Image (cartoon, rainbow, N blue to C red; front, side, top):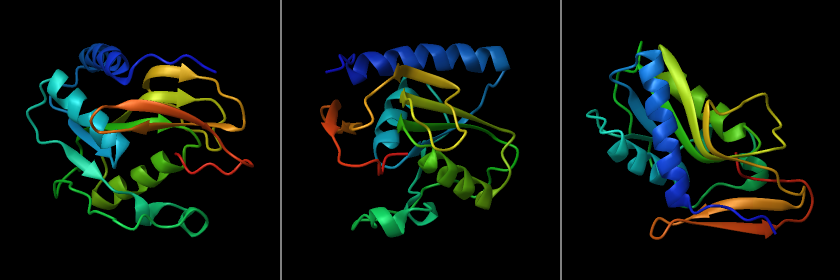
Length: 175
């Protein structure tokens, strides 16, 4: 079984990396957007750690997924909370686990329905191998290699914890 650092320590590491990246890119007033649910939990902590003044935005990409007919809809779909104007803004898009790339693709589709950002920086707590789509995190707390029959999930929000479980077949619903 793979040993994984605690989510809290990975969030601290992600905060440090993200702060350095924003400074290097000279981005002073980013908008942080957390993907519901795990990404929003991570984004809350990053938002505090980076002392971002703009309110935290959230995305629920359920209706934007290309595989909801296969994985099913979550029975409690909540709305996204985005400002009306994201045109020309620097966005930090936050997710908990980058696995197939489908969640990120869906999130970017939704963001572009609101306008065209100046940039999107993708920050993920865990980026695992085995992407289906050519999407990579700009900043990841942990790069993780799992067996094909293993899946990692963030549980929470209190306390945040990782769960690695065995799955049957290749179908994975994490993005």
